[in-house]
Amino acid sequence: MEKVRRLRAMGSLCRQQAAYNNMNKWKLLAEAEYWEHLAQLELSSYFQECSGINSNEMALPRVVTDAALKFCS
Image (cartoon, rainbow, N blue to C red; front, side, top):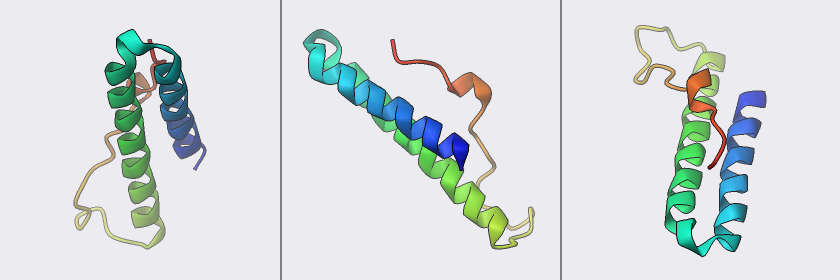
């Protein structure tokens, strides 16, 4: 759950930067959407693990990596 909080915080930072940076507004908003998508995947994965679904039955593997946790630029 800590990872979900961090991913959503990254999305929030990107949205805040977009409010003050008109030159890169759309890029930053797209990046914020990306972070939110990663948070949703992580949350979905967490609840699938909690509900006891076998690894054979899982539709999506975990795709969030530490490399994906970069800062907004």
